Amino acid sequence: MKQPLGRPRDDRVDRAIATATRAVLAESGYAQLTVDAVAARAGVGKAAIYRRHTTKQQMIFAAVLHDLEIAPPPDSGSMRGDLTALLRDIAVNLTTPPAGVVPGLLADVHGDPALAATFVSTFVAAERGCVEEVLDRAVARGELPRRPDPAVVHALLLGPVFAWLFLLQEDPARLGTVTAALAEAAAAALSDVAPG
Image 1 (cartoon, rainbow, N blue to C red):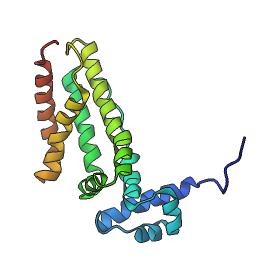
Image 2 (image 1 turned 90 degrees about the horizontal axis):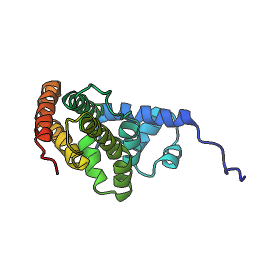
Image 3 (image 1 turned 60 degrees about the vertical axis):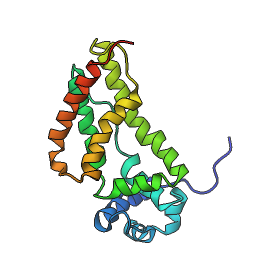
């Protein structure tokens, strides 16, 4: 077995870069963040950052979205309860990064095919897996005759939360009320789906 060249990657440096990225984002915002500022805050050279991330956007993605722990919510015993918990998780995922980070990062995702592929294969896939799990539970409990298209349901859940936060710029403190109403509406809409 061939040994890899160079010294092994240091997880402490990875953590320092991620922590520094989040701190600089909170202080300076998405557009003003620089690799120089992150390197200085992390106590590492820019080369250490560029060995891990080819662009500033990839560094930000790794620090704020990649490490989110996205898992299906516990089984509540009902589709409405599961949708409520899932929507709460989606809201947390969108509000955990500092203000302005998610819209800025999404704008950059659309201009960078490599970052877009990473975004879809990690963040979107993880959230979609949660949607699939909730739908499969509802089918198993007899609440749904069949599983609807998970992509459509994901859009149905994510879209209004995204619009509330980033398009309408409404108060994030009211998200609990919004997600409860969305869960109720989504459960009703999905329950009305005819067998087919």
